Structures are given as C-alpha cells and as structure tokens.
Amino acid sequence: MFAEDDADDLIRQAMRCGVSSYVVDGLAPTRLAGLLKVAMARFEEYQALRRERDEAHRKLTERVSIDKAKGVLMQARGMTEDEAYHALRKLAMERGRKLGEVAEEVLASSRLLLG
Image 1 (tube, rainbow, N blue to C red):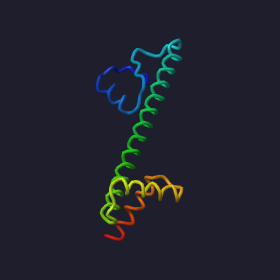
Image 2: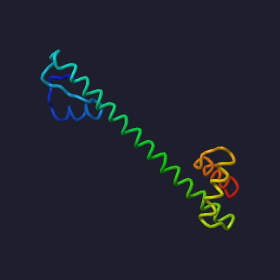
Image 3: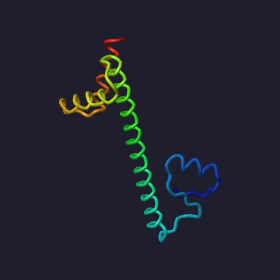
Image 4: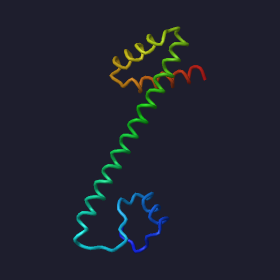
C-alpha cells in the first residue's frame, strides 16, 4: 500500500486488513519490483500459515470426535479404550472411510438412539 500518512493507527489498521507492505515516502518505479516481491512472499507465507492452522484445527476436531466415539462404544458395549479404537478403525476400513468420519457417524447414531 502506498500512502502519504505514516500514522501508527493507520498502518496497524492496514496490516490487520492484510496489507503486506506500507510505503509512505512515495512510489519510485525502481523500487516497485522489490516491493511487489516482498508483498507476494509475505502473502504466500501468510496463506501457508493459515493452511497449517486449518489443518491443525481439523486434526484436533477429528481427534476429539474419535475420543468421544470411543467413549460411547466403551460405555454401550463394555469395551476397553483399545478395543473401541480398533472397532472404529475396523469399521472405517470396511467402509473405506476416514476414521474421523466413522467416529462422527457413531456419535450421530448415539445421539439419535440415546437422545
């Protein structure tokens, strides 16, 4: 972003909105290529961090579902934690589904049957 105002609050607001570079002293054609490269690199880095965050959140959510589904199986069928995990894993393999998906199905069935 090219601007004439170097007020701290404006710079911080621009950065919160996703601005990668904030240039106050004007636009010189010789500096433009370098500034664009920096802005693109920062954007790519930011996108990579967002993907990592989203993947970590997905894995955590999946892990919580699996643990809850194991708990349902342990209580309903008197299984140990290891037996419940292996039962979920076997069901996932038989259905060609991900373990987290099968865990969600077990939880949904549990809510339907047990209210």
